[in-house]
Length: 455
Image (cartoon, rainbow, N blue to C red; front, side):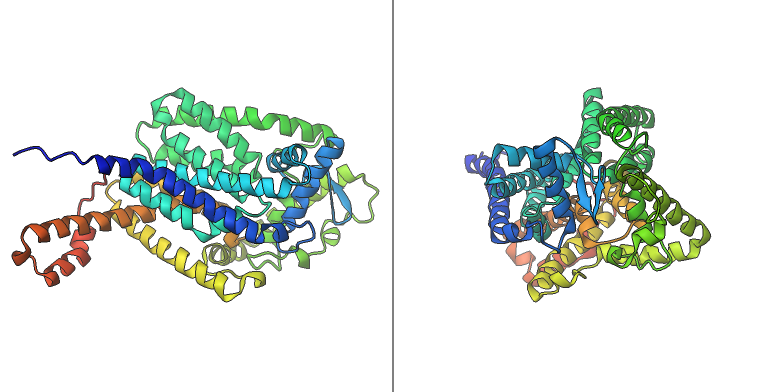
């Protein structure tokens, strides 16, 4: 058999696809950010109250070097994790008067880079075509585009979360990858303190479901130790500022936990219906702002845990409601009940979920190497919001991994159709169109007994 001729154009197309997709991701995010970002990022916007706090902390950093912010008429010293306000403060100082546009441009770049990391994860496990499909899906996914134009942690946290799981997957290649994973895990915890639970929830699953468990255990322990070193300065600062209090994350833990677990809880946002002073009983006590912040966090945390322990049935009954609010196909918030939000959500999210479920079936024979590394970060996000409240916004860090799974199914469909088309072209008389259509749609073809994805 003579060797197949080399097609130089094919290699060129592959090499040019990555920058083309990167440009697409960047342009879509920039267009969306400048279309609505300036209005949504105003401190007076009530759509996302977090924005006002992040901008307030950033402004205080530039004015006095402190990380305080006024919330509900009281000064808070550790109400938000520090990395994102620091990010905003640095850009405000570097580009005074143009910081809003500069921040939106940089977040668009961060979002596009996240798409590149998703491409690397998919290519590493399933081949170049699956990587390109995952890249494209991430580039055009509406919620990634939407949040990149807001002063919220979602875009930065998604980058760190995807990078963390990519580094963990590469940890078998050497201890330096473990160290890098620990650094990124620490930076992620300084962006959103929920990642402090990652070593307790996700890393044990990652160790137990992989091969060479002892090596993975060493990697997990080293990464956790490095993460602790990265977070340590923030913990020390909080101890000094709060007059001896231990705050590894933020003083919102108790508030968030109680909002999700109380006698009136619905599984969704209800902070505006809670009288926090009445719940804590601290309104009449002569406490400094620092001590009140620490005591309020402690009391709310204890009340939430007490309610859970006394009402295990009620706590379990809230879990389906929390999960539905997080994984529902269309937005529930009144601000996003417009037909275009609903349509964009249903047409993008629904097919991705169905395709991802198909990939779970396809990879059922290859759970350890290819399926679990994608499921663990999704399971962590889902488990976290079995305890805390659910909202569509909180599923965003899990979506890159769900998109990779969707790309696996699309890659398999493309492979089947390509091979069927080639077979039909070589013997058109023996391959009528009806038979071809049946082969493409056949479950035995798309979902064979033993599916071996491309490496």
